[in-house]
Image 1 (tube, rainbow, N blue to C red):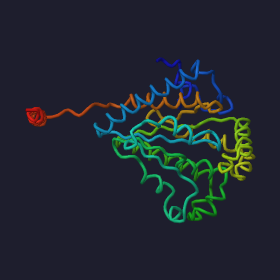
Image 2: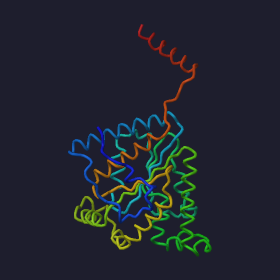
Image 3: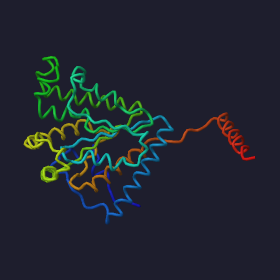
Image 4: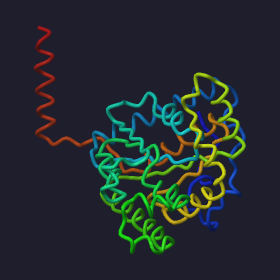
Length: 297
């Protein structure tokens, strides 16, 4: 089933200048005609992603890291659940990163995520990531000054500090790429109006009350600061090898289809193949087959 979708509209870097989020749509025309077609498309994507992940596991040369970043209520959890549901759980590792612990603050800011990079053969998923260090920390520089226990000379010039962090992140991702770990990053681009609607739904629906954090409303007041932080981070770290996808997130089914299509596209770019057996191994297989067939007699 063909999906009429141009992923280049969502993939960064792009040839036409720097990303400006105010120019990027948060909603697109439906990519499916009926709920049944949507379900069929999602199932088709899952089957193809699962097949490629199994080949990647057998090939044992590449790993893939999918990073999801977004404003609150954009749908990260649900997207991960819907897109990866049905994939062999042995081939997927999911890690969520919240406020750093005391132990994590005793280390450099990349320490807690570096140890969770996926091994060859597996898909790793980061629900938030080291990008919080140039997103939340940029909007709230007091975290850098007062919480992260950095040398005072490091925090004197915060503009320089964040430029260096972009360099650090770029170097980490280039290093991972050279070692067979392909990193693909998603920003789920929800509008401020849609976030407000979802927050109200969380307040009005008892089963969703637990999802609501009063502090999330305070963060809405810094919306434009966050948008600028996202723009700076994406523009500084989007490369052809480790791209960003800015995905319209006001409509969840369309968002999930775009994410699924992007994951499949990036997996297909890997030079995957089933392992080739040696003559000795093939001979062993042939002998094993004869032994098993002989058991019928």
